[in-house]
Image (tube, rainbow, N blue to C red):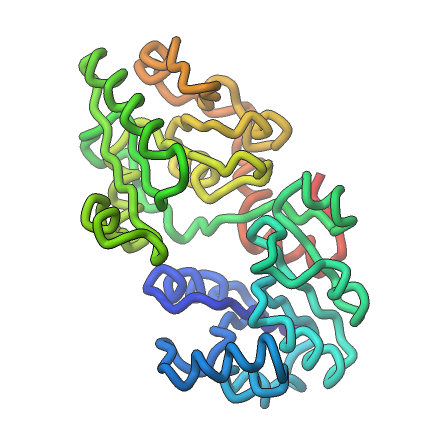
Length: 315
């Protein structure tokens, strides 16, 4: 079974993830686009292709479109620029095409009903979206190749957070920092701006971290902070990083209790900025679950891929 996995990332983190996915036998992960950076002409072609004449997108897509006969299964991103790719691959090959939603369904994603209409399979990381749009639930995954003796590093912070600015996050982080300082505890916060933020806001926040920097920060902290969007129930990378690196997790996602990654000994759920009990939680050591090796294996990318191939939804 040869699998082509497409993604839309241009940054170093995307390149790092592509290497990890491609390290799994039978899986080749490449970028949807032909260039690592989009020129003005590329952006114009993509805009025209998305909104007016979809076949134009073939000029922006990479060389993978010439190698379709080499693959038995295709996994493509759910982002709007991949909409024509889904139709093109399905029509050219007649083979299984998975549209993978590692984001909530919004107007930036391919409509799930469109995927079904053209014979593709929409799979999602979010249980709520799975039920709402009648998609298959695949859960999410991580890469064991990132984990290298994190326990041997010196702990410098009690809590580490990395993420982008969203409404309410700055206030939450300020409240958390105040609480931790009041209990003689430390935190490292990396809140990055998004492109639509004003210049004033971008200057206020920190720059984006590479994934190597994130891994180093995880190795130097007791607990990882996970902040989800209010309407999201699916897992971000943060809970999986906590599981694989054996770090505690502080999260605002109450739905985590419905996932196998949840262990009350190591997961603290924050409700309405109430940090009562967080100090005691952070001072206690990480306690592995009795079946932790089995859970870690389940969230391994290779196992996730195997379930997709076998058409087995996550439970």
